View 1: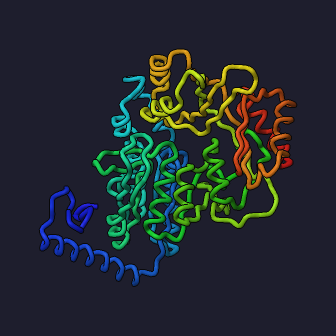
View 2 (view 1 turned 120 degrees about the vertical axis):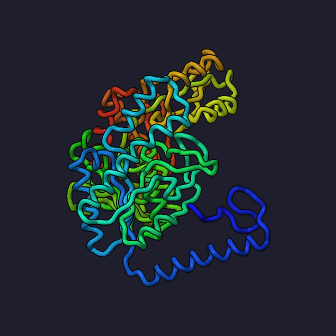
View 3 (view 1 turned 90 degrees about the horizontal axis):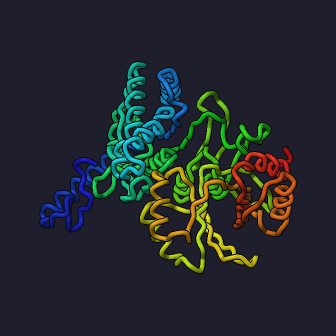
Length: 443
């Protein structure tokens, strides 16, 4: 990013009006820089591979050394390597706990400044480990890598990638280590991409660098039809469509970040989800031809959520949604209930992983809306995902019967072309997940 103009037509970085001669000079130098890269890339036969390693894969010195060995081996096989890392182990949670000891509702800007430290630790240590093995490497923060975001602290979205410094270091033969989960806004503010944002960093870089592959490494060998800790006989999936993976991720599956899958789909990037502890084939997330008929590909549960319930006739929905937007509280589903002779209610499912300061939100709701709005934390969702799942009523009918058999009270149901979700008490989530997996996938 350094030394390159944000714009070369009419203005230069900093917003100062450019003189015609200066604009020509800057434009000429930018074109020369790009042409130089094009010529060097045409001579370079080594393709680029982007790898991402999650927190559990870099949780300790020995695990970092194993990651360095894997990166070194891939480089020696003839690839230029860009490696995105998450914070080590539970570092992000520990930093968040520290912040909440200071303030129950920390300012989002300061939280971003704090939480980005975790990935910086990982990137520097992995670079050191590679250099100890004789592999030239350099570490970059999100901003140094050219990850440009909007200014939504704690939940920023990538709007542009300018990987100039990464390309320069790859040309010098170095492995580039990038701190995931973070970027910089046009206001020069450090931002974070939300939980799982390192996946998005990796996919965005793979697109910008025209990488041959984007490999996401974790503790499990790919994507399973359910969480193996809940369903021990869950099936490993060889491939998933972008849409199916995005639905699973948004409904609680933790293997991949939903925004990363959205980005991959838009850019046509194939994601390979693999284990960091072996040589398994993993799962490919890619564009797939539609298959006639309907089938369930996976079942997942969302524990870390709350349900916002509002009296529909006494609360103006646009006013409530504006209140939530102002506090960065995003909803996953919205439904209405007023058909059983009771007061009409509006329900909003709110994932909590990026809601820092839930008690503050609760208090602000009470001040603004009184007893017309409540936040319920005892509910969760079980979601079945698959193309054509709601082509008829069969899957919903069977899901409701399965819930009744397991004693799970269904508070609400939500359907879409790819998804069927049941809202139940959190105490029923694991039991119902296993039962629906057996109902639809046979194990």
